[in-house]
Length: 400
Image 1 (cartoon, rainbow, N blue to C red):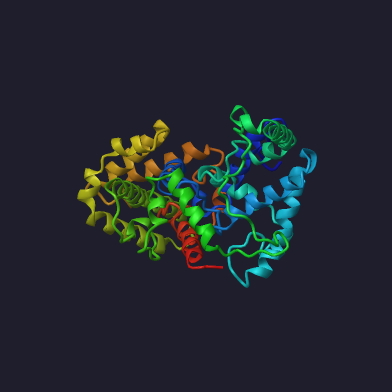
Image 2 (image 1 turned 135 degrees about the horizontal axis):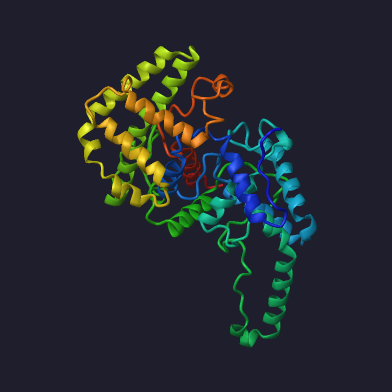
């Protein structure tokens, strides 16, 4: 029987969380063989709040609210609101493909209108994080409660009309579900639309990021004039406040040090399977050890206590694993042949996967290994962030 994750129909919040978990299996950085994903995601959220590795284009942060507002203006009922959202978002796929003239990153460009994940589910969390979505409801609950929203708005409008001279007594709290400053959609929406940002829209996004996460690296970069393409966020060459320099250094050290554990894991699997370019993996590990050696003094000074205070909620077992691996890195031994290092990685994978799914203990699981699992340096969503910022800056130059 295939494995699955289920939720109760009456628990939409759990359903939305489950959808997010399921989506992680499709994300490149979700290959979390050694259980470091919580730290990776916490650091990513600290540096680039409201983002996700499955975000593609920035204008979806506006298109999704426009879809909801469009349906609300038509007073679509709760019973059909969710299906109408899905239908409208799917109908926008060919519209965007036509209007965007070969632009990349349009959701559904490959699967077409049968695409499984729609923009509203992908961007919902980010819309809340940036203060574009004011409602705290899940996307499911939003549609389920929209009839109540219509009634409350109608009632408030009636009270306001009858009490214009005394309107301070009328509470309007909670009636705005989207930021009041949200730019209006194109006049011919939804029949004509493209993916490119306009200047007013980029200015709005800049303001939202700055207002919602003023101290974040994302907010700083959203107003940067010296952003250039690079492999990792710590390669940014512009001036940064001290707190952001420190955060980036923590992220860099964690990425550098734990990269070796991921490579060693793949080396060990290649040895077990007798295939999958063992020599290339060994060469990669030796290259990593050389880079670590060049920074060994910095790694030895790395205060893991302060680091873990920055990412609260990490399990005790994960903390012990990181401490143990860092201590081995700082030793004078070559970790490739060190039995203690191999045992640490092996036991960690068994602990995370369980004995029945461990590639070290289950031959079928090993046979399904594709030759590389999580064998990359953590970049904390940086390529995707560069793409979103590229859209932002292009919009600032787009007067139309």
